[in-house]
Length: 75
Figure 1: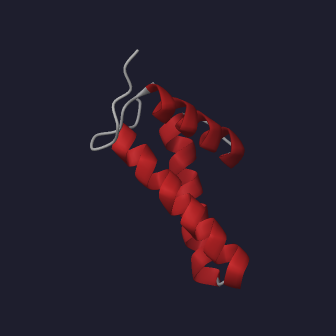
Figure 2: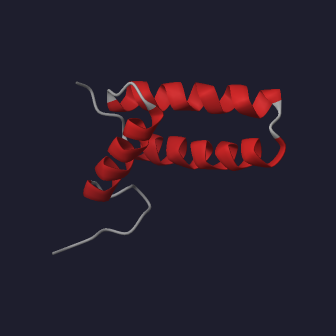
Figure 3: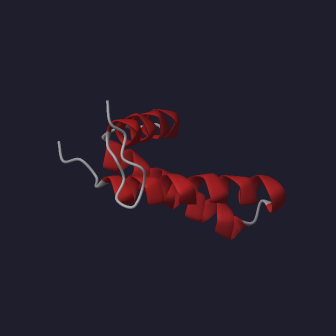
């Protein structure tokens, strides 16, 4: 399976979290549709079928891979 670039995953996670907050706040049709689109993309990017699994997989992958421009963890 192809793995999404960490920067792409980080961006998708940030978008999903922002859209989730917007949808909870004002619940517009546009926010809901965009959130569904980002959720779908996260699922495709992580090889999962449910958003909760996609979020977990993306976070797990990001914790194991330094994101460009982010801190580099050393042992």
